[in-house]
Image 1 (spheres, helix red, strand yellow):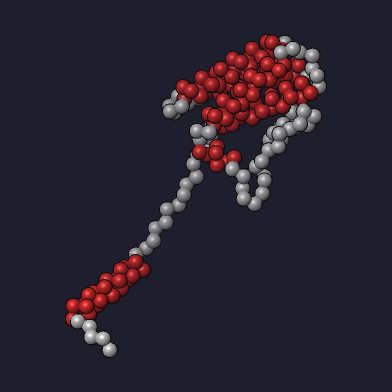
Image 2 (cartoon, one colour; image 1 turned 30 degrees about the horizontal axis):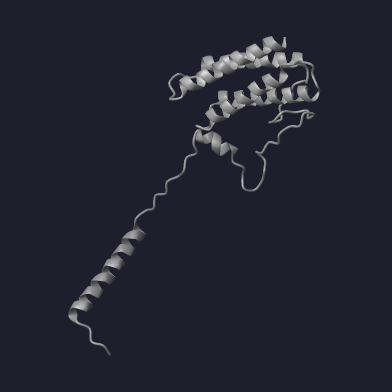
Amino acid sequence: MAEISRRTLFNRALLVSALGGGALLGLTRPIRHRVAVPPPPAPAALVDALARQQRLLAGYDRALAARAAHPALPGLRADIVAHGAALRAALERYPGWRLARVEPAGGDSTTRARPTPTSTSAPGGVPALAATVPALAAASRAGAAAASRACLNWPGAGSDAAEVATLLASIAACLSSHAQVLA
């Protein structure tokens, strides 16, 4: 049997008592878990504006597929695509928007297929526009009015208020010029 010095015995006893005291203290203290709070959702005005742009884009796609005789349709469609990209870029600033777009692990209930030019509904299950030029002009007028209302009602206190209000105002102006071109 190996001899143990008093110093070694004292050090080991002190270590065991410290470990026991730490374990006892750890077991008697309550554990407070922090609950993750989801970020606020993106502003409804921006989400609605993006949905309108997608419906309008689907209408342009159907009009182009139906060979509607209007020479400005491809250029106007390009404007609508640019509006959608700008709205998506504005929505990317909101963590709630990014989390809402993430597909759940078990299914694909939030994914949206790109509609074909002959489909009868736009993304999100909203009835699609007719593939006629007058219907596109009416939808452009309605979109311009909705974007104007969203711009005027946008809260001015946010950090991105000037940029979002400017974006909505420019979309409203562009859509009203589309309505004039298509009329």
